[in-house]
Image (cartoon, rainbow, N blue to C red):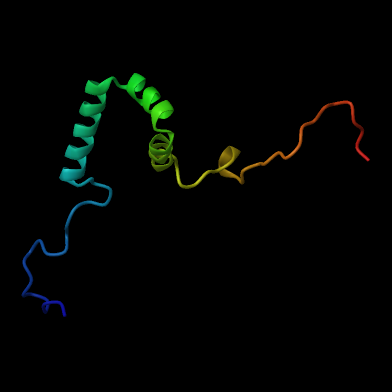
Length: 90
């Protein structure tokens, strides 16, 4: 049960501004980037793609967007055939 109005600290409930990353998260991401640079950067990731494809693809999956939109924010157009140009529409 929340404290009655007037008995709460003046800054209660304000918290962090929405979208502001946690300081620990930022620090850990910086360490990972530094370690990747020290290991060889893109060349290291390419080697891992060949040596450990499961781990590499797991990393790729985590970096991909969770939602995909088509042109102009519309639905995604999926083409299931190839237009060879020599066939007439029936």
